[in-house]
Amino acid sequence: MNRISLKAVVLGFLLVLVLDVALGVAQLALHSDELFVEGQSDEQMAAALDALTTSASFLIFSILSGTLTTVVGGYVAARIAKRYPYFNGLALGVLGTAFGLAFWSEYPLWFNLAALVTGIPASLLGAHLAVRFGVAGNRTDAP
Image (cartoon, rainbow, N blue to C red; front, top):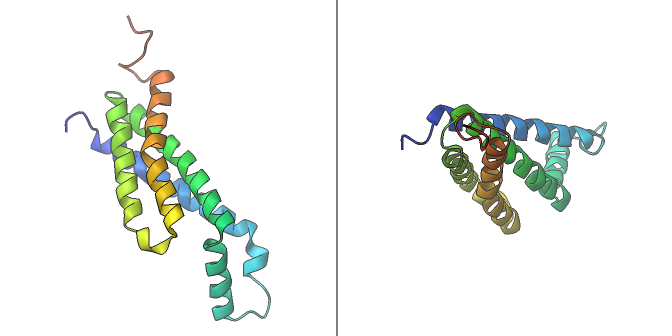
């Protein structure tokens, strides 16, 4: 367990959450004309929001952007940890996957499976990029 930096993994995970929320809000803002129609009741707005957030295009964008943010989180976790970047990237991926399982029942099966398949590889890719671009103690050009 001493190979995993709790601080690095938690900060990487929090960054992923912040980025995911920001991209989700941006995606909703792009569809604001569909959600906020004048004279619309609260029930109609809630139904429009539900229809939008369960649409295939919204979910596909969420998988793609979530994968990208997970790469960034893996990179940041590896950079902060400095040592054992792949262990820290893996820990971030496992944490993110476990977090996603908490919301399993809210999304379609294909979405959940895509999230399961992409989470750990994306975080390891981020850690690999951190190694490739010179995490201290793991650089290939070190003497």
